Image 1 (cartoon, helix red, strand yellow):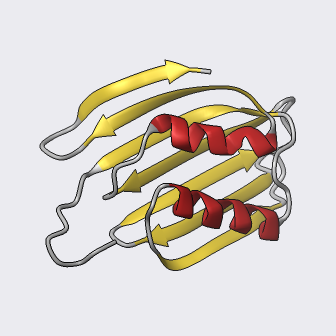
Image 2: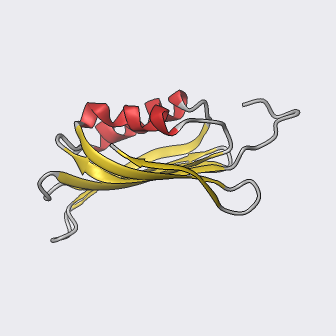
Length: 131
């Protein structure tokens, strides 16, 4: 991401869905987050960091990655059938919802609903959908 002349484009994608083969290992989720960041043309400044939580009723993996003035985070509850997840990515780079949603195929995306928000001047829903 160039620093001179760069004009941030404030975009936020929120996704709620179900996965057939959810990540359970921290290294797997960290790799997935790293590949996602490359896909949306952003720069990692910290992380990714993932942790598996064994708290009864809240079992699953959580992962985050800090990007240059942006972030991505996912929480997966893998005891549900199918596994349930919540995800969001906020980016100053332009990216499409499809670029991000397609990245979930390796975890067997069963279904999801999503909302894409332009935060450049206020909060404006620019797209939403289901898969």
